[in-house]
Image 1 (cartoon, one colour):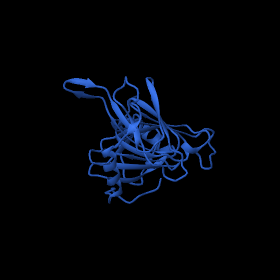
Image 2 (tube, one colour):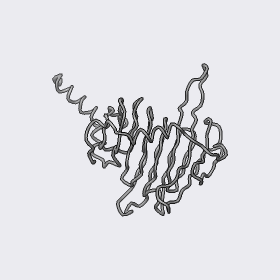
Image 3 (cartoon, helix red, strand yellow):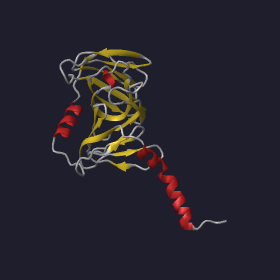
Image 4 (tube, helix red, strand yellow):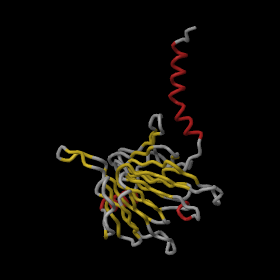
Length: 242
């Protein structure tokens, strides 16, 4: 028995929409709180088409968040963690578990910065007794102790005809709140450093090197990013709560 062409098209369309429908059926883990720029961001679940993002739109675990060349985007998660992403950034939350009142058996927040400048203020997950918050970059992992962090990841690239490994910079900022703990552990298989003094940080020059000794740092890209997100934003529509 042969199906009519229209029926076949409907089946193909239905199969292609399954990943997107699966994402839509799961609870969101946060929302886009601010966005500015001419080329805005998008989110893409595995196997699904990318969807454009506007201020107020929900975000989901497993989605790859990308920003355009002139875009600065801020995400506020349900545990009050805030991530700000600079232009041409890629970001993903692979694991997220947070329940109001700490009802979750294990609070967790695992994310990864694939490239670009970023800044984040950790929320409730990083402050629980069973905290499990980690931010990975291409060359290291950042262990969080309730804090305010900035950094930049430069992806693997070509220089003078030779492929150069990815690199990253990470710095600790002043915490939000006078009694908030402030420290990060930056580590990879070659070494680790603890940064507990605001204004100081580390550099990881490539995928085969340990984090550098802790030193005073200034990342101008992040300063520009922060100024952009605080300026009047073109958001593509009014903010909507998920």
